Length: 386
Image (cartoon, rainbow, N blue to C red; front, side, top):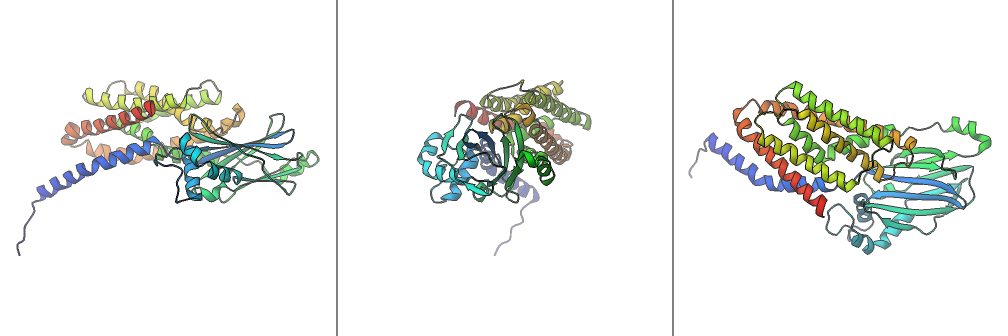
């Protein structure tokens, strides 16, 4: 039996080759993750009409695909497993969709179950699934709505419910979760004071804060943009500039979105986000050292990324009025910023440690920037043409 001693240098070379061989698979998985992911949020907008209660329930297409897969695991609605539900896939599974739609909410008027009428189904151009359903009956003194949809969705899913009167005035809202899936409100005018004591208003701030943190942590395109910016930050000052101007841009976008002063197509925004990734990566490649005036680029593209964050909530119809949308948008944005701070705190020490090595500055930074540009190009192509 012969024994061979493998030099340490050869071991390091073998490890590097294994990394390069594994890279295409990682790259493909990362790109697919950036193309579509579940929002973890669905919404119900309830409004009293002349004949009862009208409800519009909205899901992201990816969330609906998960729910339908749970209903019938043997026949997934999302045939090509791209995280979206096309009109063809939607039409083929329409019976399952109707079954799911009818069981989303359980409504009670004064303790009596209000059966749902025929559901009207639709899939909009933002890949959102919408259910319109009415619950007939006179306006009750007490309304109870239970979200049963959690049975078919991941445990971290949340559902934002809002209630409006027949004059469109907001009567209340609540963030529901699997552990607290009931929205109940006393509507009797003679017991208004008692109802206020009985059920103090519940702020949805915490729920949207958590959603913002989750969104940035699974928003691989936003993370890659941030990585491209930080890759060439040689010191603490430059890193603080990037984070500060990115945060400032988010805040401005939030204000504009809250005041309904900015309305841009979600598809266009997503394409612009991908383009921003490519621009930052190419700038890293063509300029020696840290690009000058990087704060300007960070601020400009930060506005675009911020609009993308706001679009997530608006496309799902979180609220129609400025007053109703303010708390969700602020909480969501704060969550994004908190998640961003944590991520920056984790990756910056690694980047700074690597930048102490000449080999990384000479080859590592260009190689990483090239990969960032490649991923941005994949996302841009997908979002423009598919």
